[in-house]
Image 1 (cartoon, rainbow, N blue to C red):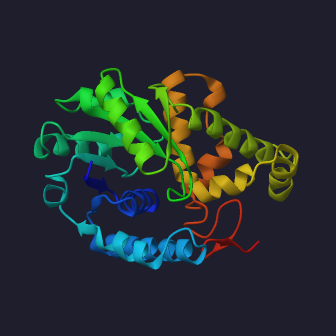
Image 2: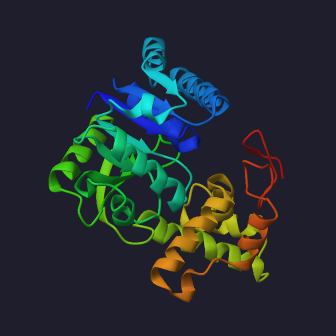
Length: 288
């Protein structure tokens, strides 16, 4: 696959665009906001500079990567010739369904439509389209240029051929694909989010403080980042959205989001992106 379109230029979208372009693909990065696209390109350049400084890539690779990314504020212009589209918009079914309906109308019939959703049903998204056999999940991990895993999620109608192609493409961009089936939360978030939610309950019930909970998990369980810090890093609104999807999917009380998480999101304390969550943040770093 040579022509890739990425829908959404946020943290995941710009990381996905960066990675495909770094490995020789021509990438259309699409967002409704030119300001968001400008910010995304600045982030990509900063992350490429970090790779150059660590001698992961050369300056020439950085220049070539940036040249391969073109920005668009129109899905029609950006995605109409793509061989693979990776949607990385907000974790909201209504938003994603609107995007997939449009993509189904404007892309060639052989174009594979992938979603970076971390929890929403691939089967449900695919049903919006006339090509459910060509709809698949590609759940990249954050930060995309660094993390090796891609959860490849098959919908009920996803074909063997499309799954094979996505495996091959993932390996070609030096990722490790793992096939999982289409159940709420898939594997990564079905395990991770209840752990984060339980850490929030542990704080909510007064068992221990923020630093104490994270220290136990880092030093006792060898986690590189404590669950509350990780929740801030992911975004508490995203954590809540994923927990709601899992809870709605299984109707099991053990997946119900903690009231503290619900209240923090309602108050606008969303973690590192707003400067306040379980920690106080400034420019992506914890200040207290």
